[in-house]
Length: 140
Image (cartoon, rainbow, N blue to C red; front, side):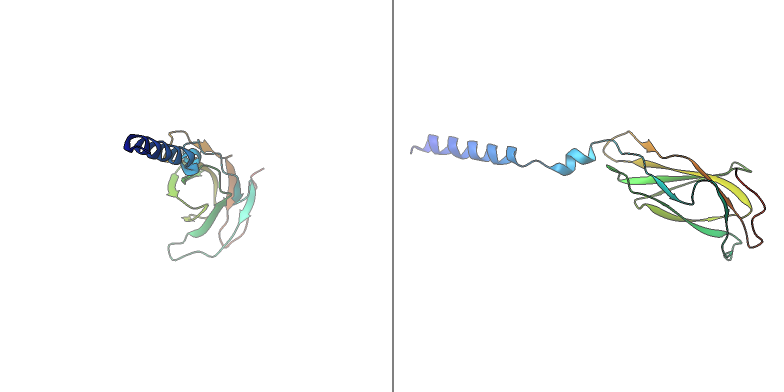
């Protein structure tokens, strides 16, 4: 075999080897994220009670199912009485947030992916956060 043929065959093999390896991670990460499905606090929860922390707030652990093609999440919580909005980011499908009690809240999650600009928003759920005194309201 001549030197030129040997080099041509070697280059062809390298080219084929490079083409045969597909990086599935790049294919997945360049797809838009799907919307997360919320799990807790449940939709229209009329009463969530817990112990107050040192700042007279209740620590609520928000949870949702992971969504496809997602690198991270934005948790958006709105106090429905004063329209105060809390926005927190996390790579996880849960986040604990201290909230004032005796208020109604809405919440949703935005799924994000660093490889694309598209995002996906979950459903918006509402709940009432009661303090140690009980549950005087209904969200229905």
